[in-house]
Length: 201
Image (cartoon, rainbow, N blue to C red):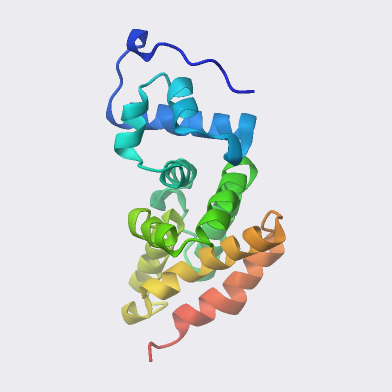
């Protein structure tokens, strides 16, 4: 159930990251209470204790806002431990992506992806404005592998970096189930390691 909006003018003034984090948490709380279909910019602003204009200035549409909130819960590049080899680094990275896709963030991501699938304009804006947090982790994992001499630098291409997370998103979107450990191992062993080890045509 959504909470009643409070007078944000009586709240301590927040800026920058503190305000963004409050808004992101409000998005996830609203999603848990009313779902994606019931989420509004006004409801998020009220729960975050800020003005509606502050939300719209940062994220012009509900899709942008929800996606930003979901991505804020994804692990950062430095959160992936350096295991000493490419395969285990990839496994650790994708496990963290899978964990971030569970629960409310995962439900929100499925809702956003379902909406943009029918609208090429929205899909293009989404790709432009929100570079994948998972892809940044893959780039960090690949950088380590290049430094170790496991793979060639020319093998680290944007398409290859996006592949692992794209396969996971596809699974979540069409199967409506959490990503399993078995699937993560298959993606790493059957796709990511061979792909990164192969020369660029």
